[in-house]
Length: 157
Image 1: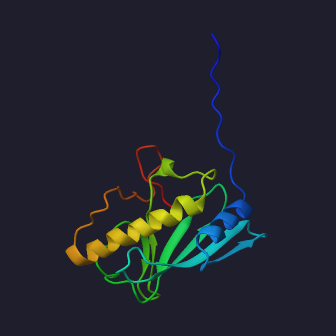
Image 2: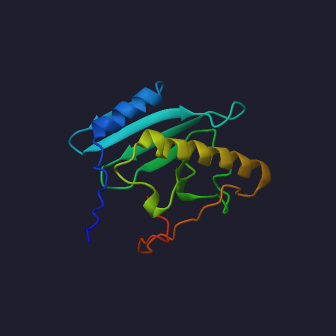
């Protein structure tokens, strides 16, 4: 009987991530800090034609979870105790670090341009519905900060 071998896709380099982000999101800025081995992406996102335009900041270090913040005056209800799917809120500086995915849904072999940014657009869509209805209609789970990561828990980005 033959042994089955499973191969994982290799991690993408920061240059590959930057090229993909710049080709898909042409109006955004993207840079790599070689000393820290991190990618920084800042762009404007409008989830629907009728939506606000939001400023999004992404920081990515290979092997770690991408961190995504939505920043600016467009954010509403930052003081609401039921503000959905977030890790941190800094109301004074008008920014929120958002929760986008479960632990196993992102890996360094996936393009940020095809995962994290579209997931951010989707999060913003449901955020606007939450503003209108008071209910989070986007589903998902919220992470328990400090709880060990498993396939059944969300990741603390």
